[in-house]
Length: 366
Image 1 (cartoon, rainbow, N blue to C red):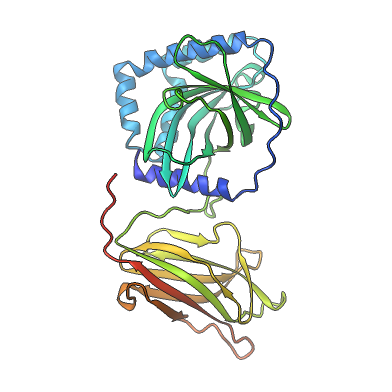
Image 2: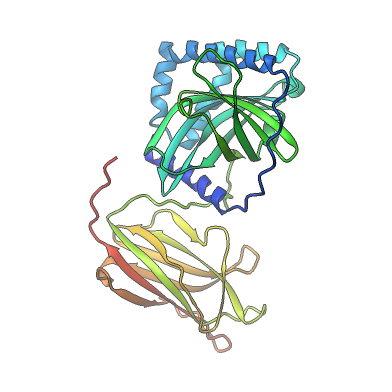
């Protein structure tokens, strides 16, 4: 799996981990009959075997290993237009199914600070929503002890939600649909009952899904202020920790005697990372935030500290420029803002403590 894709997926995993998960509902009873669903999955497995063993399929699936998230999205969105899947989907839509979406997705497992597994796929309207729009999605679960980065399975699903309404928490448990082929099956549910059924070929077949919590994201344009914030950093030559940030004197923003602080750090002019990623830290005069944020960098790190005002015009209360030449391994260094943000009426001042943890780190061997 391409490193860029692992980082992009890990950013979604970071958001998922930051959410407050609702309590898992009690698993529902398996429906008395699932013969139609079983037939759909068996035909889907035949269609996948036909596609994946064809010269076109082999070439395209080999290329997936070198794709980033946008490229994988484009690829899975093209699958319903392949002749073998056009025929399959047309047949599924001719059935009297209670479900509203049929999904095709690529399964993966990865470990990059956060361990996660899931599926990148496309949902197509069938049954109650046949002919409705399609939607690309990412289904994630957080797991420990996974492979470095593997993508190689395929998952098919039948869901009670329309493609655009798939987003949200799901819980799953393994079920036996009596397949002759090597397929694992799971029934997924919410507090409202059964949400869908999915089967996997390849990754995950040996162990099944056991009991799992997952979150389904509908993939879309993230815009200028993306909902998914960057979390995972690419490995670089040096490694420091922003140990703490001290409020010597807060900004007087008219909203009390404390500031709602977050900062953005940027290594070597690359990606900007907010911290905390989805929140802020309240600070009064004299207080110290033991933030402990690690940063990979080659030569320099820029840090900008903001006071969250609940608007797009958050106030800058400190800017810091950190160069490798200013640091010594294992020693903490205090930095003052490179710009004076105080005034006659507002003596705002923040400082940060930085420690260089490692220098000239050997390249990671995959």
